[in-house]
Length: 299
Length: 173
Image (cartoon, rainbow over all chains, first blue to last red; front, side, top):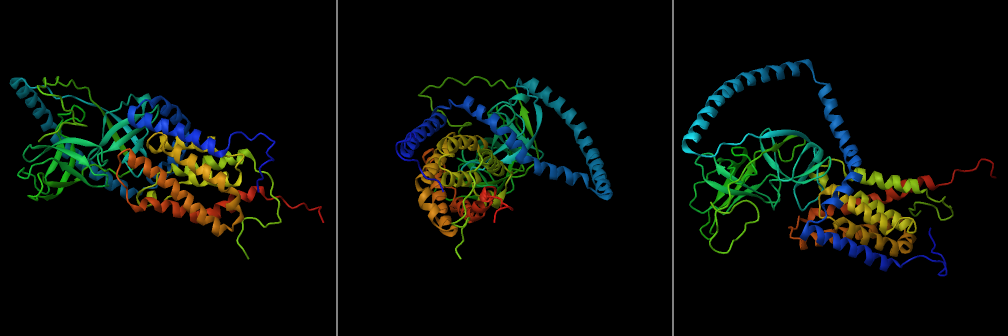
């Protein structure tokens, strides 16, 4: 057991004084981070210290995954091979169609004078872990500034949009998932081209369409893809599928819940999309400008 | 027989600073494991638990600076607001340091109750900060981790005291 020394020894400030000092320091950091976003450099310094631990902590899982890959049976491999070559042929047909369609599309766009679609580059990344913050939906991936990842780039997996890079560290980056409460994606209904805003709810596996009028044509099972009008997400990526439409005339908008298409809670590989877009300038606003938080409001 | 980590007669060896660093680093590492689903909720905050342990056992060796710096690291690793864990851990360290004589007088079971309360206070601090910053209440399962941490307290106290037990001298009669 510890015994404090007699009072004639110097012990420094009292615990209460220290508590006040450290609390004030933390509060300054909190306000600086929440209100002014000044502290990215400090965060990066701290991230360099934590980085080795983050890698070591996620090592057992990735080693286990690799060990699992090592012990596959011959029959499983052959089945995989057969499935993949079948898929390859199917894809090849689609790909050939795609080339001609792309040419046709470019030609039509040319005729209409519309903007050309952008080609995007992709970076391969691996999910390290889900952030243990119950208030947000974020995950950490293993590519960062060193791999030219920039804040704001969309992240997708094999089945759809997962989220957006919101903070970049030297070797890692944070991805805010589309299920995060503060995150929204402009989407379009594949069936009829209606546009809407898809927002996270903070619950895993549920996202919702916001500000959709009661009479708008959205049905269960409709597929939603990115509309691309935000200049962040490339157009046409699958985002979600509508699971429930609730129209109550007591409310101005319908409640539409959807299931994300991407494997939001899966650990595995993702793609970071590098897209260079030139967004046309906003038209002059006549009255006082009203700025939306993220994305554009409206149908 | 009362459950104590040490018998009252036993005099423990002084703890090595390297051992403290090792335990804190391990706690941080365990916190960063890729937990998922239910385990993400049930997982105690090991860093908070180990910081509290050392603040209670060795208040002159581990205190505010360590707690605060570890808090900053947790903030970066958890992608949370910068300073949120730092503030919560500072308050936890304060509680540990102020209460250390009182807590150590109790048996491990009674210490456990103290620890659960202090860790709940830690959770509550984080919750208040996040609610002020505009987040939603994540649900009561948010507090499960602290109870699990409390249940781990006796195991932790016995484990972390192992290197401090003197080796019996064979020549001593």
